[in-house]
Length: 268
Image (tube, rainbow, N blue to C red):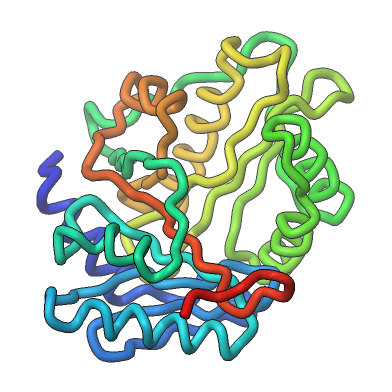
């Protein structure tokens, strides 16, 4: 895989020309910034920018003013190759808080020598599609057990995504117990499907459940005509994904600003 060419394609299709990512979302280009505005319970933020040192601070201030006016917390999704090189420092100075650094990884499906698609979950675990509210509730339960975080926002978002048909959501079941869950975003009119939300409950980690869900979604992506899978990988998942055939392309860091979130002060 030509990593540089694929990264350029990723930047063009999923960032500079980003489509709306779900029901009620819209994408706007304002100067050298592309932002996505979603519903209050969805994702809001900046997906792409082409800033210069001279114009960066004004562009940042403009996005803060916009999302503050909407009463929304928002994220500036910063990639390792974005310019100017000190953009992360400028975001922190403007009141953003950086999250964990992850690795943007891409794998090619449907090609000889690409992703390993034959990996199955361990014995006694089956993969089932999520198609209704009851399934979404199980996914939310797995999320809370796997990450120790409230999943009420995820639950509302998944309800909308299933209705719109933009996502493939799956559960790994051990008997009647949900032990892992994940989703895949099918980005229309692009070469990419995105892997998101993979989480396995304690007691089932290290058994190959996560690998099985990745391979399952890769097969679905290939069947639906997508060429690439992308994922923002944590340090824990990166080695697993590399063994499956994914390539690290760059880093990605979420910078979060409170915007106009009630009870939180926005930066001046």
